[in-house]
Length: 237
Image 1 (cartoon, rainbow, N blue to C red):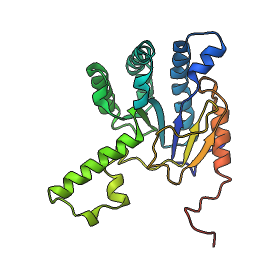
Image 2: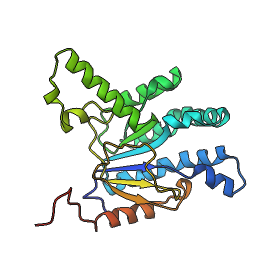
Image 3: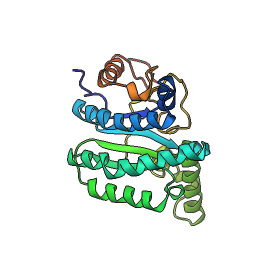
Image 4: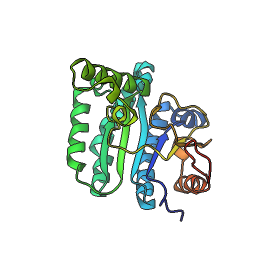
């Protein structure tokens, strides 16, 4: 087993649910349901491997533009997930977090999210963070607005704004930057995900659609990560 001693945080773009379903002549909703089931499996495996943070791109701000029927299906799955699977993860000492523009979500979903965050806040295992109604450009703009207000009010000066202070204004302010970003489903783009946070993250692109992504592939990614030299712009001495 490939332990993740050198890996603190893995971020995943869970892509390929719809194409997985279409390939099997199933409705896209079947792919989304299968993908939701996969989350629990991969979260348990990440925890077993010693990963401390796992951040999953579940629903982007751009996804609101999808057909209403598909959005409604996704929101229904989210409601189910908040009431069942995530509670099981709580029993396994997993801490649950959510990042994104919550105001775009229904009140009952926001309430369930907040309740889960409170219930799991003291859990000491894996921190499982869901990016829901999330867009990185929007997140950065929100942080810029916060900084502008602080400067305007005289709480800070322009010179106080640096990488550390700006990072503290993001949704991920108390989450370490990802060591690894995985995108499943065969596409090779970032899709407005954690753009600030992945400045020095190692990127892995898998042709496997998310519903078929297995624990052994996660281990293979970690093994590949452990062979890479991370120089952060420097040269090796």
